[in-house]
Amino acid sequence: MGAKIGSEKLGNLYSGGPVRKRREWRGLKDTIYDFFRWLGIMLMLGKFIVRPRNLKAMFRYRWMSNYLFVPMMIDRHTVGLRGEQLRIAHAEYDLVAKDVAQLLGDCFRADKRCGNDKKFSKKIVILDENEMFTIMCGFPNLKCVSWETAACYVSVLLNGASMTHYLDVVQQMGLPGDVCPMPAAEAGIVIDDDAPIYGACAVQCNTTCDGSLMGNGVMSRFYERNGIPCFQIAAPLRHTEDGVQDYAAQEIRNAIKFIEDNTGEKWNWDAYFKNIKRFNAENKHRFGWMEMSRTKYPQVFGANLALYAETTYMAVAGRAPAFLKADEKITKLAEKAYKKQNLVVKEHRHRAIIWGVQAQYYTDFLPWLQNCWGILPLVDMLSLVYFEKCSENDKDQAIYDIAKLYQEMIMRNRTHGGYEVLLDDLWRFVEYYNADMVILWEHISCKALDGMHGLFEERAREHGVKLVWVNHDLMDPRVVKRQAIRDDVNRYMRSVLREEPLDPTLENIDDEKSY
Ligand code: SF4
Image 1 (cartoon, rainbow, N blue to C red):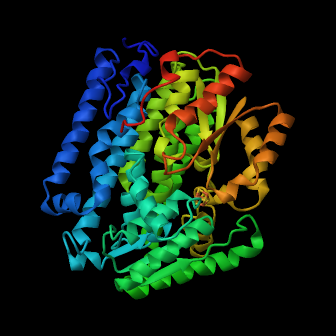
Image 2: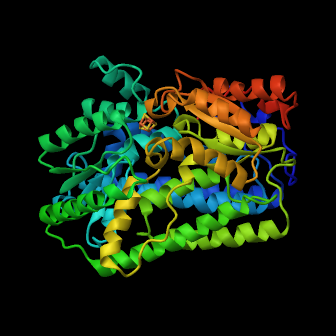
């Protein structure tokens, strides 16, 4: 136990109950730093809950109780980290937590059942959780508030079991059990009358698959029932083809016009270009971190890259200056650690690309990989998005840029667009990042990916790359438990590679009840 990486046997921290036996000891300096960051989060939670409308929401919405677990969620994702790595993780997670608190605050201020601020509500556009927020960059006087992000996406990160009730509700209504739990849970929340009601209008996107389309259908009925007009951006699925770009751009123009008509606001090009400049700058930082992962000393990777990238790229989209400031800080820390040739765990044994759609109920699987087996999750599929620079002054091009971002948003850019983007690109990235291993998430309800199983295996053999399949059910931990996910890796490492774990106490841990 101490300041040295790997000095604590991390499996010993688990108690089998909802909380761990104790906090991790990281040496005096890092433990004090980590403790004060934890305290900061507790204070933030305290400040949030003293507002009467937020307190009311806590009792009104079942999913709100998950927000009590924010400090535990950050602990799970910083496990084993020291020095710059620990500071990078806190710079990210603490800011994301603050941003989500703002989202919840706006949500309940406008919500009919809590704050019921009608004037404020008329300034809100509702967006899907799985949709680029770029379309709001040109509306500086409007807010975009996604209740799905608060109720579903973040809730599962905080507490893996948070959506099981809603999945039961939607299945009782007749939805088959093999539908992707993400759209199914969102639909369940609406059917259970557990979604906040607010907003001038809503803009949906045909995100990724038939499951998502089903979910959007249920959601749009809910909006219409509550007098909230809803527009659906039908972004082309064949997103790599030039022939569909004019149509895609027209969809964006139509969506902008819809927002203007329903809010009385006008699209503002100055605001758009200001935000998109920031978006470009954020992408440049992220790209720099990912380039660092090509070397022997990656610094911003794994869960630190995946979760933060999802938030900044998709939901922030350049609209909040605090994120660019955090990016600058992270880059400085990463460069400092890189110069010192810092390792993240005591031994870097394998370099892995994480492919497929992650288990939302077990995002701390990536820290587990590195701590237990010394497998570095260099980059993940969801972070490998569209990194072309968007125009910062050309209005015609800008519409095409936004259209491209909608077509190629997270998950959609790989689950659709043909086998080139899902299958061929993987081996290109394996080579680019000098990886020797692929961890392939097999989301068992994702029809978009499941059909390719054999093709992945064939290609892995051709390239001589170690391929480890990891089964999960996205938001339903009852179907594939966390230990079952770990066992997919444990089995491969022991029986195929004949390796011993870096930290054997992590091989089997009793964390099913833990938050
Ligand atoms: S994980 Fe698969 S099934 Fe679920 S929303 Fe994404 S593409 Fe659709």
